[in-house]
Image (cartoon, rainbow, N blue to C red; front, side):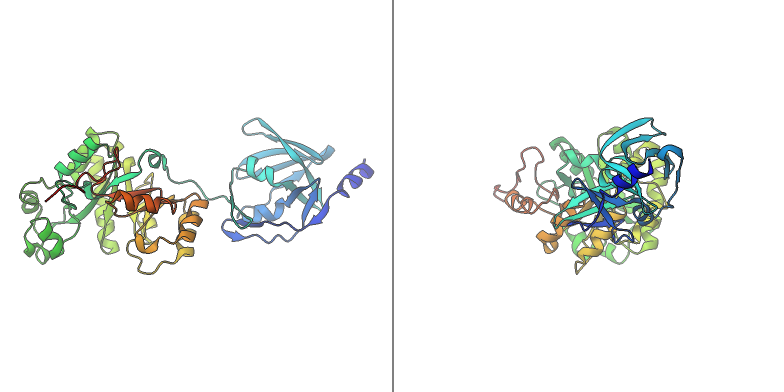
Length: 395
């Protein structure tokens, strides 16, 4: 028996591999050698499990049986066998390569890691393989059917940034189902929909310029028509819309210092809870800096998240990729200044979608789509016709 096993083990040779492995976003340099047999590469599982941040926990039994415990899942393996049995799910897997103990270390083909260990495996250009145990915290199913996001509730009558009820109603009828809104605080600390308190923005919306220095009360804001004709909205109004229209999602844009942002997000969750607790799972916070993630998630367990690079004057591509990849954030929003093809390709290969803001010209959108852009924020593009219906209108 020992002779047969020794002869079998002798068939495995030390190997160098063409691929560079990364485990939990760090270059993997195992202490023990890779092995090869019949053109199949075998990895030292001891080193892999340690690189995943877990304790190596397996026990050799009689007749070559091995009991491996990884993250609470128990696997029944056997030396020299290609059969893996998951005792938790009672499923059996048949691998191309065998499980072995060599030089006192457990070895398995990459196939075992990919198919049995509940890790994420990505094969990237440049012969790179990324293996990670990062949790899939968020759900991005909404992306599949929503190439276009209505910017500031979408445009209306050639006007943008109104964040108004009429803008929502118009753009919902056009087919938008994901709406971005801007939130601001009134002088008495209540949330209204407004892009900013700056003079230029107020002037475009036909609102008192004096509000830039002396913010209005909630009642003053709500009783003042936008551009003299559109209905201003409170955040509670948005919650009521979400209760009525169960197929919409709201991207939340909050600017300001971290304390102001936390204050607004606390109000967001409390207000939504009062109207209908279920709608909270359809909010999509838009982050502007890395530290916002923990602050926002400490308030509520949001089900989706967007990382916007709007505030970043200089793009640090590696930092953005590392942050989103390691935290399970699958959507990054960029503007024209950051549309570096190499950066977009790397995000794509990591499974991260790229949206661009803000585009209202269908020809420009076609150009950036060729770079790998998944979708855009827009004021005036009709999501069904993919045309700007105001473009050719005469003033």
